[in-house]
Image (cartoon, rainbow, N blue to C red; front, side, top):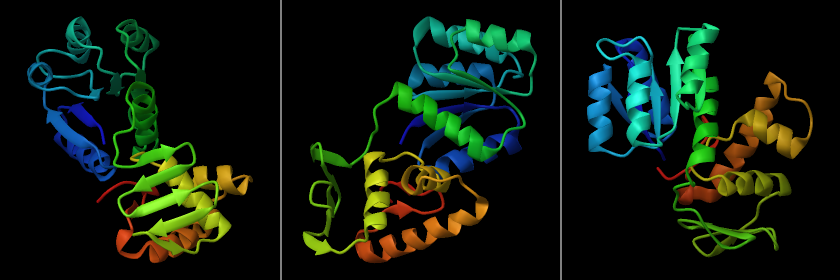
Length: 225
C-alpha cells in the first residue's frame, strides 16, 4: 500500500481517483488546490503525487517546482494539457510521468504501479524466509517442493493454480492483471474471452484457501483485507 496525494480541483474526477486508487489498496489524500497540496506535503510523507496542472491559485507547475526544492517524492502529472511544450516543461521539473486526460482508470493504475515499483519497496506482510519459500498470514508456499500449506495443513493445488498463487505472492500489494497472468503463465496472446480461464482458476484457489483467502479477484491482487 502506498500513500498517494491526489491534487485535483474537479470534485467528480477527484472522487473517481480516490475511489479507484483506494480500491487498489492505496491510502489516498486529496487536495483541491496548489496551496493545500504544499501544506499537506509539509505535514506528511507521501509515496507519490498525482498532480493536475490547471489548479486555482498556484498551478501544477509551480507546485511541482516547490515540491522538488524539498522532496524527491515521485510526481505524475495528470492533466488535459497535451501540448509538447507542457510535457517538456513537466519533465524539466523531474516528474516521473506525464499522463493526459482522458485516460482509462485501468491504464492509470498500471502507470501508478509502475512508478511505485521503481521508487518504493513492496510494503506487505508477505515475507520470504528463503529464495523459494513465501509466507503470508496463514499461507505458506514452497517453490522447491511445489506445496502450499494453509494454517500448517497441506492443501492440494494443481500446477496452474500453484503458479498463479506464486505469481501473486511474489508481487504482494501490487495489481496483477488477468492479461499478465495469461501472458506469463499460459504463454499465448491475450483475448478478452480468456479472462474466464483465469476467473475459473481464481475461484478454485480461493475455495482451497478457505478462511485464509486474501485475494482481491477484481484486480487479481494479493493483499491483506
